[in-house]
Image (cartoon, rainbow, N blue to C red; front, side, top):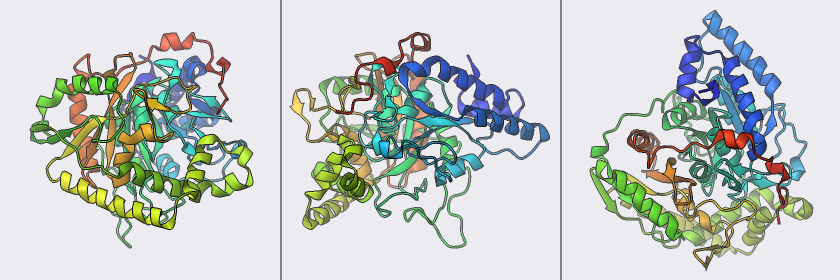
Length: 496
């Protein structure tokens, strides 16, 4: 095992105990990137010299006996939607191909303050639109279990970097499953927290709960460690809890994850929330995987909230966010904006004020249904994604089991059901599907139950790890290191 393969908690403990230097860890991550990234194209902007300088400074602080932050000396990958001071940040857009911000985003600022070292930027689709990580600036990102297939998105680069051991931690963001989907497709863990838990000061519609920032890691303990540094109070985010003169969220609030006895947990199971277009293959795999562990819960009942109206509600609310963020770009430079962003904006312009009000009213109805449902259950478990990874040359699935999808994001319905009502959810790897690709479970918690859902995920992870059928899968790194670079693939930069 190389240092880059260590989990974050162990690596941090070893750095603090002077058993591992930050320089050794950062250099190991750099070596892994050099070895396997050509095959998958995950770490698209690199800041190695500055990262090594920061690692040397971190080691000096350790030797001096300074107080060390929870992420002291740990290299991280930052999604290319997060602004990083003096490091190119493109948002996957030609319009920002040469953009170098002067300041870090709030989340990156908090991670650095906790001791994290930014190693580079991870690939994302243009402005995060589309759950297939491709753009005209850096090209496509391939799945480490089969580089010809999609890594999902929009946090696809972060998911691949983690799966390959390029970094122990990486940032993500999530609207329609943008960190849960790549977590599932790449065999790692991703968490969508409650809106405002991780302040996101850049949301164009500040009161919208749809878009959130969150952590990605290789296990739940690492995820919780990272979340403890990302979360906080920040009045710039209107959804972040801020009480004048009082710090609501304290450092370390969610680490380590609390211990929970699964025998006391009431779990609901559904392959589709009653409406998501889940392929038969995924339904079979979900049934087989959950059969392994259903009996560990106090109750394990097949049940779902009433999700009628979910598709239309999310479509309208999502489109409003895209108009707020990208209408001006589509109008001024339509040739520089890709098909997914354009489709969202054009869709939004077709909606009337009555459509918008109707969607907001229905969102409230759906929220109340979920609240009532979670009076009976502590968690709900579904597949994380409706279908197995397909070739990244497919911009988005147009049909599932022969039935046409409603839109390019319809296949994300399992994720956006949770987004719409604002509940926290974690994507947990559970072995492989019938095609030999990673399979992920989505564990949904109660409103505000972020700590509880992470505790359940940590306890379930301990159960799953001991079974070859459900243990976290690991890609063949030796095979990846010998592959032809993905950049030589036909259609690498083609967005359709």
